[in-house]
Amino acid sequence: METKTWHDREPSDGPGMQPGVLYLVGTPIGNLSDLSPRAAAVLAEADWIAAEDTRHTLKLLHVLGLKKHLVSYHKFNARERESLLLDKLRQGGRLALISDAGMPGISDPGADLVIACAAENIPVTVIPGPSAVIVALAGSGLLTDRFAFEGFVPQAAKPRKARLAEIAAEKRTVVLYEAPHRLVRTLKDLEQAGLAGRRITVAKELTKRYEAFLRTTVAQACQDLAGQEIRGEYALVIEGLDAYETRCPPVDAPAPETANEQDLAEIRAMLEQGVSLKDAVRQRAKTSRLSRNALYRMALEAMSCYNDGCTCPPEPEAKGGSQTRRRET
Image (tube, rainbow, N blue to C red; front, side, top):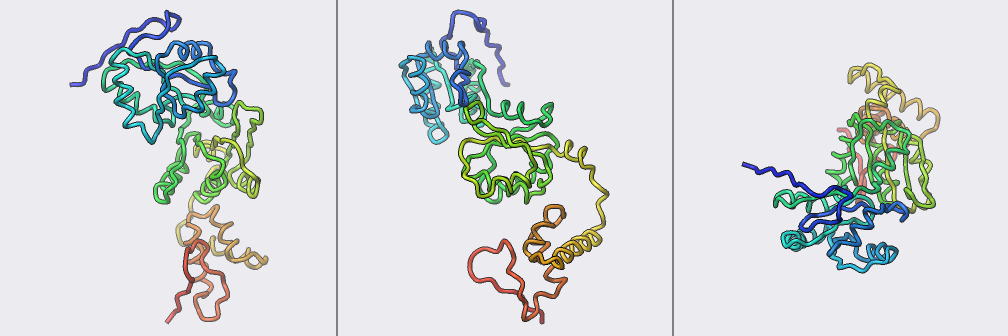
């Protein structure tokens, strides 16, 4: 049977750090003035500071006028460092854990250390501080009463597609993190996943000099940011399905055959206006229940484009090698 223990400690305004307790210390996400006096006091008293990037932490400690024993603790060495840190706590060491920015344990390997401490019945306490999730959400202009934090979207194709589908179906406001070199790709993938009309707030450089909030839709964000030089760190706050459907009530879904006919009619109308098949399919995919490739194949079959002499472009997402078309027999 699992043993549960209440860890009684001195009040937060008591005589400082206690031995054998892991202290999670929130640090600024961009503005050093956001470091709390309590956080600074804990860092000053700690015997050891476990940090995601010790070089980054040295800059913070220099501002505070501190010299401390640092231990690197990040996702690449978390498993091997865990036993070392647990030993220090068992021996009564005063250990503080910080991340490069924000709250350790939130989208951060510090969560694993907290789990390990809980399993070992080692006390943990939290020194609150800034968090990009909350800062972005508070300034988003979207609903904040219920939200889901998704961290970074997976990069591998299969789990990424699955996660994007979950985000599209999420009823609550969703908060994501994204790196600058992947921002546009993620926005385009959100658009392709059916979120083109969702409201989104793209928050960058939070609490820093060039902090900015772009409040728009996913589709418009793709257009606005395409071709721009993207710098800084980003948080994306996305309108949940409930809020979206309240703002844009869904119409009764037509039968599949009727929906297909509507898709084809819209594509034909765009073709008559001189829009290429590829662009027409891409536009229709934003509102259709079918994928882009499925729409493309359906349009080709409906227009008998598999016959000899076809001048239509190859399928939009085909990759690698030469592209050929099936011929009817």
